[in-house]
Length: 471
Image 1 (cartoon, rainbow, N blue to C red):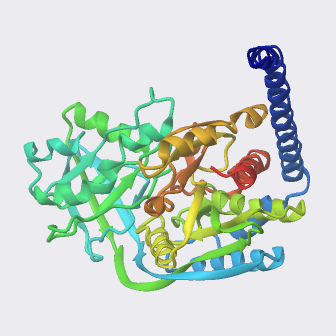
Image 2 (image 1 turned 135 degrees about the vertical axis):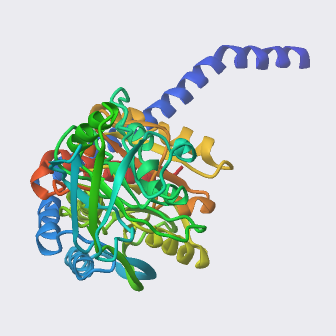
């Protein structure tokens, strides 16, 4: 009797278990499908709002018109900060505050430069490099020596001469950030390293993609063991081609430089923070941000007005759609990214001292061009599982041609890495970025409204997915 009952139980289990598994899986797939549908519908609403109702491009126009170039510590930088605080107040976010820090100040001053080839004058377009010292208002004259790599400096006769760094960005690099990274060392360290070899100044080919007449500025650093801080100048790529060709032909090129660039005493600035408090997990923060400071040749429109206003667009969109986040959504406009990174460092320190946890931080600092996707990094302890979970969102982002991959994030959010959240960078089509980067051409007229708003919509969509599903 017992044997028969056991047999019957086994038979029942064998016959019906596959059907139960099917029912269970069907139910699970239905839940997942409904969840994906909900996500897809809301992300469509995000994009519709961005392209038809968002005022974020108007916000960017206002920033460029009211503040213009926002070099850290200048009145224009404070005008930009005040303007952005007004935007947050008008959006009626839950909370807005400042994170103060000491920042360096640099004065560009005046620059004059003349060049000659075998005694015949040539025209050059030039600009001083950020954080460099000038000539004290007294002209200096020297013969140019072409240098292609920093490592070759000790093998060149530079006593009393001017080092001319002429290594171009590699045009074969499809990802232009890699080309930039392969050339920018000569701008950052050229003045410092060449002065150790006796050079009286350094001139660098602008770190830009095209051959044109616009000089590019950018930060230069003097290393700690430098006793004589010689001037650092950039000339346009077109002029660098002419000078390089003359030197390669064995001709003598001389330059006379007169510059009043100099560092000023440090001052106090601040980053602006605004947030919408989460309803279920308020202690898990999802950050979006860009840097409010810029160089002083253009308006700082792409670098990084677009990143700031795309981050504001995230809050504007979620509030405009009546969305109540589960987690705290925080927007940070960082100060002093260009010539010190004090904004990102001070924000991370303040946050860590408070015991905060950033589940994710998304930075936009690549210009307001067409978005391509997101790249991510994190503390090694959490990176692999977090990236795997984030990549699960690719299916719902695929209709918008957005990828998710391993890679860099952003200079201002990198100091948050010890909190062990995911750090994410918005990646855009970078082909035109280094035409404008750090030049007089970084102006609002060169920002395409649709491309810019699509970047903000991409960030908002990822914020929504992380907020809904976590990592």
